[in-house]
Image 1: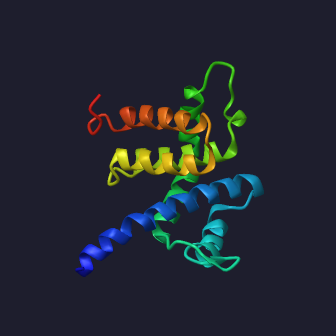
Image 2: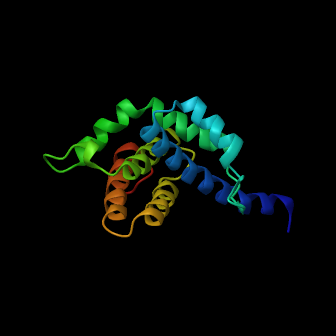
Length: 160
């Protein structure tokens, strides 16, 4: 296998691991109140590609992880009103499960600020994460919100 081919095959899993770590970090930040830079350092030092209880974690693209985390936090004032508009009348964003909020914030950030990543990849990646955490209605809700956001943010890429 050529080196370039090997790197292409390893690139996607490292980005997938970075997305999962970003969702976990967003959840952790919301639950514990820790700041973004301290959370990035903690994950880069101890979690991205490290070990937990003797189990080796998947290597993650640390720069991609940090970009998603910083971006989701920096644009949260833009993301949350969008999310609020997607909810049924009378629902508040705070009623959503905090993991759902983390998944949506990370996914929306990528759709809005990472045009280098195809919208279908963004949606599929965050749906995979949602399915890892939920087996009921949440993945369908996340899919609907991200799909609507893609049509709005990437209208030139999404063929409606």
